[in-house]
Amino acid sequence: MSGKKPMCRPLSLWNATDIWKYIKRFKIPYSKIYDIGFERSGCVACMFGMSLEKMYSDRNPNYLNRFELLEKHNKKIFDIFVINEKYGLWKPLIDMGIILKTKNKTYLKLSNERKEKLKKWNENFEKNFEKVLDEILHRNPEAFNLKEKRQLIKKYSINRKEI
View 1 (tube, rainbow, N blue to C red):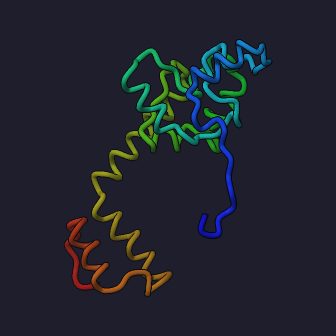
View 2: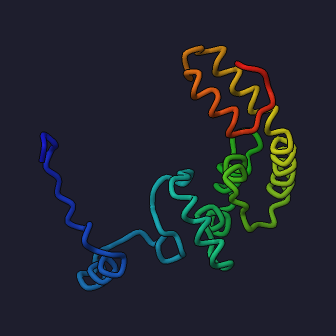
View 3: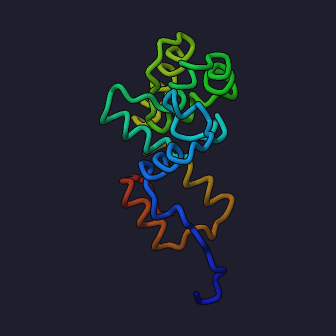
């Protein structure tokens, strides 16, 4: 134990099939969202695990991630959480490489604009990296030692004088 609190995780030995068998056998009530394709019942805007859903979607074109299911079953909430131009999740999703399967015109417009911005940013990566590194060093000159600074410059092929 080495000073840690004892833990008990009885379901850690069960897989999803075991859990569903138990639920059906003992007629345990559960949220009906599982019957329409959702795999979790947490906060509607939670992005935790989206990288796994992207992996599933990449393998199976018929797979709908939680936001695609949200659009299918509650367009109003989808519009509030995902499509809102100022606060919506469309931007971080696109930045993560998660492109939603939707015909929503607002999303498609925002998605295309963001992908174009990212493309330009990546084309100027070296210059942008220099700006980020300079800002870090300006705020905290001790953020990197000389060896780390040289490694960063070498790793990202930055053509600049000694920092």
